[in-house]
Every structure is written in structure tokens, then in C-alpha cells.
Length: 596
Picture 1 (tube, rainbow, N blue to C red):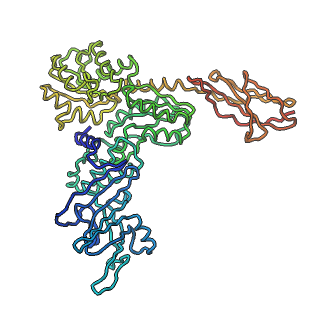
Picture 2: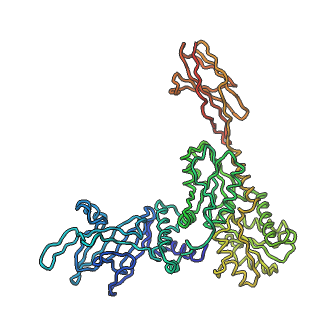
Picture 3: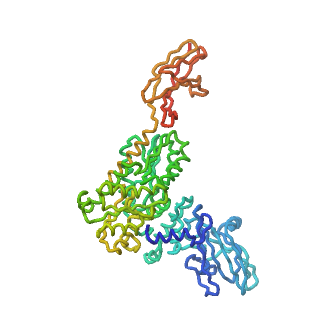
């Protein structure tokens, strides 16, 4: 995570900005006694109605994607109403529009202080918004000029200008771990604002790296958010990364491996990190589903059998989050199964550790045996977690020792468990006598943590700089585990194991019908994959009020039918899944048979 973004997230958590439910408000500066100046943030084309500098307030509502704007004006004229509408509108229309604008007027020292407040769509930021004023005013000659003012010079406009401060506020609003209905609109507004700034103004945006940092071409990434899914789907869930090229190289590579292994399934994507979803959409316009949206897409497309494959390292908080989300939707599918995380078994751990060790050695330019006997420590940086599954990190450390990888030291960004904190790892490497270190992430992606917490050159608290400060010669390898074929294979195998629990009945057919006296005998095609068959019959071709009979073997006789009448019959097969639930095929095409 970038240092600036870290500070921003910390600020959000400590409520450094004024917050209310799902909105973020930014308070104006107290200008009591200050010389009155026109606002450079909210511009009016009407000089006698210009917002006063320092009185502007902007509140961003994350749920609606709307912006509430307020400001003061101090003038000799008394404005009691304001309509965000063209002055050519009829009085009734202006009055209606004025109901959406709050105007408070106070008189002081022969002048009127007008406090104005209104709400606009985020899309209106940076645009000219027409307005019309209702004034209570008498001219010097005593003529009453009260009413909706029509300016001979033409329509007047207010513009909420994109400033570095406003763009930063929008970034703060969308840098949110939770989903909000208005976030997409705010993402568009933030990008529009960023693009509107000059290069000098962009330098003044505290979190300018949100848009400015180069992470690769987003167009090379397939967000897998298409419809027309079909009846069977594998939904690959990942935390996600805003690093475009690494997203392609890691998550995209895992998705492609699963797609290759599941040719009869559609593969789709969902991220669990809303912060990343918002970032990618705001910066690059790429739409990635969150877990709920991914499941909703499956429901909308009438998916029957769903395999969910998380790309997590362990069964931690993120994995639990996926499981809980799927539980809410499981009744909307015929069958849902969830694949295990990367390191679900002892064999998985060994495969993963071997793959990373081999890759680090190859990147270093040595063989595995040379790495074991070498003078360079391999420090593997994981994320860390407060979840009970944090034991995986100590398991990997113990496994490294058993396999002779004595130069492996496992640490975590979060320092959970405590033995994996960076200071503990540095001391362990020192104690082992190593002078050279290679830092490598053990995360599916090599995103924010790998690039900044691990390898950040400008961050004094990055592992790179902390190891350097401790006297080590340090190299970094920014490679996510998802790039390794062995890891891709693990996820494929876990998805296949989950899919094997799905019941997949073979289709059947009616091979023969025989009419008798007030009865019909139906013969169906059988298959070893099926557990049983059913036949339904009705006198209506649309099968209205149809009755169902279970087939014993491959034939069933339907008795007590009406003589000389035509009946329609259909068949279907079923299998049972691991939970014992019957999973049916569709009914066959109806066949007509006339009873004797």
C-alpha cells in the first residue's frame, strides 16, 4: 500500500473528515473578520452573486453519488430564492425548482448575508449550472423590482470548479472498503476532475498517485464480466489488485488456467476488495464485479451449477467472506460448490513452497541446490492475519527447515503472527549469518504490498529500506504466486475437486410408448450416470395439471386414463449430489399417445 494512501486510509478510519452515515463532508474555513474575497472553488457568472471565499462546504454522499454544496454571499440585495434552472422558464417551473434549494437570509450592517445550499449530481461538477434568482429589491426611484430576475445580458451560471482539493476529496470518498450505490458516479467524477486539472494542479493533489502511477495497460486485462454465461459457471474470486499488468500476469493467468481445464463452463471474475474495484474503474474505466455482483450476474443469467474458486492463500477472513456471500445465494442455484484455498493441505503447502523457492532461485540465476548452499537469504513476505489460519506462516517456516531450505525466512506485512513481524525476521536473518537478502512476496498478486511495503524505495518503512538500514545487501523480486504454473495448477485441481461434487445427470429420451385400454406404457433411455427417471403426463399439450410417475427400471405404466383420449408424456432423468439432493435434467419434448 502506498505510503500516502496508507495515511489516507488511517485518516478515514480515525474520522479526520466530518462523516455522517455514508457521506463525507468537508467543512469551510472560518473567515470571521477576514477580507471578503470571491470564491475560486464555486464560480458565479453574476458578479453581484458571487460565493464568498472560505464559506464553501461540499458534502459527498456515497450512497446517492450526489454532492451537496453550500456557500455564503454578502450583498446589498436580498435574494430569497434560487432555482437551478434557466431564467426563461415559467414562474411555476422556477418555483418548483427553488424548492430544492435552501436559502437563508440574515441582515447585518445594511447588507444581506445569503446562505445557499443545494444538491447536484456528481456529473454536474465542473459544468456550468444555470441559475435564476428571486430578489426582494426596490430601485432608487422607488420602483419595486421584486420577483424572478431576468438578466438582459443573458443566462447566469454557477460552476463547482474542479480544484486539487475537490479531486482529493472525491478520491477519499471512493477509497472505501464498502460498496455504495453511488460509488460508480463518484469514480467517474473523480477521473473527470483529475483530467480537468493542469499539470501543476495535479502536483497539488495529495493522493495524485491514485491516477498518475503507471501500472500497465488495463485494456490487456479481461474483467470477465460478460453475460450469456450458460448453465454452468466457475466464478473465480480474488482480493484483486490495481496493478494492471500484474493483474493480467497473476489473477488473469489463474483464470485462464481454470478456463482451459473447464471447457464446458463459463469462467467469470469477482473481487472482494471494493477499494480496488473503485480504483480500477475510476482510473481505467474497467468494470469488475464484486462478489455480490458476480453472484447476481450468475442468477440473472440463469446459471444452474456454480463452482466458486477463491484464489486465497488460506482459509482466512477473505475466504470466510466468500463463503458467507455464497450462502446467501445458494438457494438460487440448483447446485453450488466452493473450491479450497491454495494451501488447503500439507501437500499443497509443499507444492507452493517448492514452486516459490525454485522461482526465486531461477530469478537469482542459481539452481535449487546452489540456493540451499548459498550465502543469500530468501525472505518471503506474506500479508499476515489475525485469523486462526495465520498458522500457515509458521507451518511454511517449519516446512522450509524440514526441506533443507535453511535460507528461507517467512514474514508478514501485518506482523501476525508476531514471529513474522519484519523486525523479528531481520533479527533471525542476522542471527543466521546472512549478509545478502532477496525479498519476495508470497501472495497471489504482486500489487500494492509487494511494490510499496516490500520494495518501496521512497518509503523508509519499506522492507527494502529496513533491511538496508540493518546492513544487508538487498534485492527484490516483484513476482506474484499466481504467475507460477504450479500455483495455477493447484487452483485448477481445487476447482476440479469441488466440481466433482456436482451431480451431472445424463439426458434421457422416450424411446417407446405403447397405448393400452385406459393405460399407456412409457419406455425411457437409461444411463449409468443417472439415479432415476420420472415421467409426467397430461391431456394438455402445455402440460398443465400434469401428474408425475417415477420410473422403475426403464418402463412405467400409467393407468386409469380416459378411454379414446390423447395424452402427452415427457420424461426427465436425475442424479444425486454429495448432499443427496436430486438434480434433474429438463423435460424431454412432449410425445402424444392416444389411449384405447
